[in-house]
Image 1: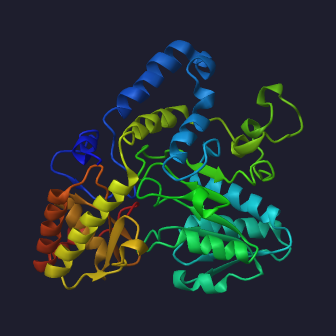
Image 2: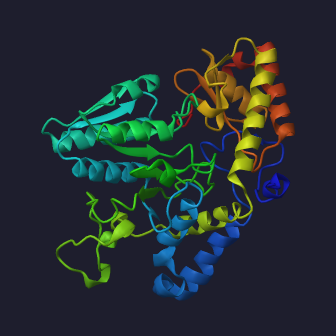
Image 3: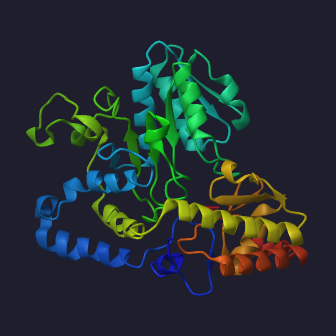
Length: 397
């Protein structure tokens, strides 16, 4: 049984803060600052350019990729880190389309994160030749998978509502229709068990700064199934995806396997922070994590609904149909969230009307949830959100 008291001690959370926004930016692991400092002073400072060899910098995207693979049910040697999530979406989508050349439709849903859809739209414009993005309501996706679909591209957990797709069933349906599948795990990796290999997923992508706690701007990852690893041609043919980067050939030859999905120079300081963050997971059983997070969410939903009838639940009640976040709707959601933050309960707002909070037992317990419920209900019952100070929107919401 996972000791979540021990994992909570591994995070450096400010006094007086109940942090319910780890689904947007995870908190600072206690060892991360020292690990980054060591990379700066002992490695960069003393080894200079020799750090690429002596400190093993060049191998970090693969070695840390294997550690993430263990958290998402992927085969070792088939996950690599680097770049941003949007870049990894583009890579996966371009490769998948090329592997299915007789079809032109990318199928996604309106709950997908907009950046994923923007990358798909941009790629369709670049390719021309009838390529198009088709989006439907999340619940309508399964019925739209047919022999026109080249790629099904979905985020497993809806970033607004927390609704979770059935990865296994949708992947099977897509494959039966002759389509390939890309899953965005931004709100899945580190939130609950994922089984990419068991579900037969073709490609997956995700970020590390949410539930994996690598810090702002932490690098993204990409997974390519072993059956595609040497056939998927990288659309972004960067020098570190080359078969022999330091041969400095004038023509691109893709590396074998997942290394071909590397693009540019790895972000060493961010990877150092991620390395420290991944240490938190050494003794964590993901099934224990899931059970504990569900209990926290149930407690939160019951408490808020009991005392705050004006807040409308947007997240499924069914445990199997939700991720690790809970969203409530209200016309004044932004102001309510600002009032919560002012009282030390930190979640976030998502347009147009969502109060969104994430729940991970790595650093949250029942006492934190009880405090959050008390603060939210006081704000609602006394209409504290009406304070003009909470009405002006900041650049980041």
